[in-house]
Length: 174
Image (cartoon, rainbow, N blue to C red; front, side, top):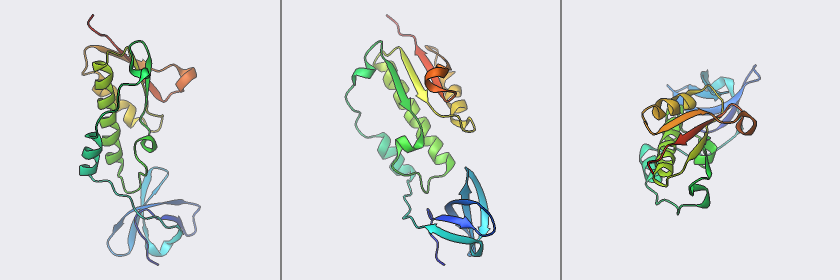
């Protein structure tokens, strides 16, 4: 059986299903199952769905970042709360073929871009929705926010966002 990166597969004698991320040697594939990577012999895999891979290179990420900015919307006006959803499915059409580090780099790039835009638009508050997960994105965002002297941050209101968002207050010079 021929497999491709991005194919959805089932592991024989297990209940596990996942997506092929890459191949090792001639007879092994690395499969992502529940955000973890496992190596399996190809003979232990059954094809469930075949996908054509969408692989995003660093060059494509930079080009996406360089796209012209949209006009400032009403939500970026002073006093409004800006919400930025950093879930990967909100940033790209398909994450198939992207490594976890590629996804994190893209999410952090979007974070920086939106924070800088909010500061230049003189916004007061931004809520970055990052999800709960393993906390990698949340930790990276908070580490970066510590470098800004004119902002403070905390968990966003639980009733609105659950545990998966960070609220940033921007202090502007009058």
